[in-house]
Image (cartoon, rainbow, N blue to C red; front, side):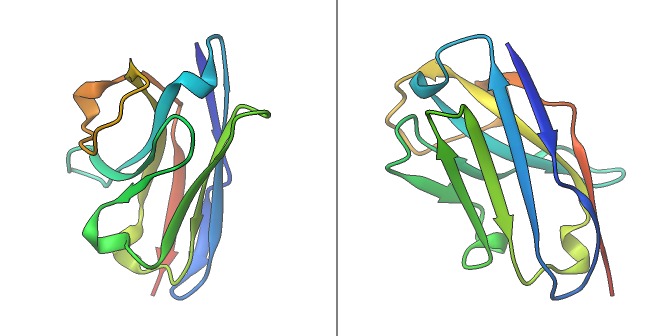
Length: 126
């Protein structure tokens, strides 16, 4: 399984970016997908997830109302639209695939992901 993330960059506070992740190697539509981020010197943390059919989305509190996760099961892609970006959103962002096929729960942690993209840097200047 390969996950290829793209779309990071440098943006001013209040700006927007869209991250994309292209997946290949297994039945994409059977697995939830997530975005995690890791700031310098900190652990990797959950940002957002979308269940296998796109019917449910989940966000960490700090990004609710600003970020939107979506997926296209025909194109095997997952995206993260990030609006109203803040300096504290600065991190390397990773897409990941959940190890649990057809998972219907709402808890997503790094340990539940079995494949990871290479990470894309998002820098928000103040």
